Length: 402
Ligand code: PMT
Image: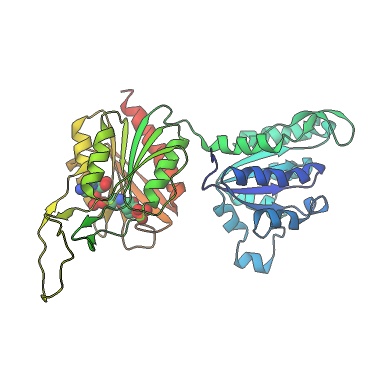
């Protein structure tokens, strides 16, 4: 399975003989679907050239903290923001000491101070250096700050010693990075996500639709799979790859989307309605192309089924999350929909602002539920989806334990 599909991994390489194995880590992460960027400390470049990583990743390798070109492109803050997770492998004793003491004296330590994402370290050094109380103290300190320490393993070392200090194998490290995204927050639950627009035919040529790309819903489906759920994704007409592990049902119209969702609803623990369902559909679809002879034409439209309300009123044990897309009065309209549609939660996004919305890679959400709310600030939709799924899981478990 592509366990790192759509994930951005920043691979930090520090100076040690195991640096050559970092090339294999990069390949393993790529095979699992990740986009990988490499940052090397100056000492690492003594063991393996940046060119190797550049050729494998197809991207420039970052080595300098103060590089005029990089600062205007992918500077340290941008790199820290870009990554979904940072893996430092191998992590030398010197690097671990500098990181633990909060130094920012090269690009890698600086961006680690700047990142808010999960950091994983794979120590690799001589066994005596690893056992040294200073190294042990530094590792404990980093662990207490939430850094995940992977290994080291035991065995024969490059220096001839035998003991603990070998870097874990590349495949194991790549799997550990993937494990970090599998939260298990929705383990064993059935989730339906609907996504994208619907298309309401007028005649064989024309239709009514909207600007939804499906990106938000597909990101939510992926985040739910990573949280351990069985996910059915009911997708309107969009051009997106199916996230791995997701059962996808393609539909075109609101009526088809309604039928597909309702066919699965009785078994759903959670329904996330991110689709932009067209609200009105032509009463009749013309059998032939309508000729444009008249200067005016009239269409008679009828309301489409409200899929979300149908699910929320059918069985109140299904945890229902609606979306609200608004150009004004975001909070007021979202809260009204929460009430009117009998929802457990509503995620509201602005339309027409540069924080996200339709057909944008970014989004920002104001999430409301009875007696609570939370802001998810503007960031790439996969990250927004992971935050929202964590919130949904928390509220779902609260609802089912009270
Ligand atoms: O697809 P993207 O380009 O990534 O954009 C994401 C998005 C902006 C489409 C998404 O974040 C979003 O806001 N989706 C809901 C859009 C919408 O239709 O909102 P609404 O306020 O009109 O509807 C309220 C809720 O009722 C929604 O959960 C909607 O799915 C649901 N609904 C609406 C009409 C209908 N007939 N049936 C429904 O279930």
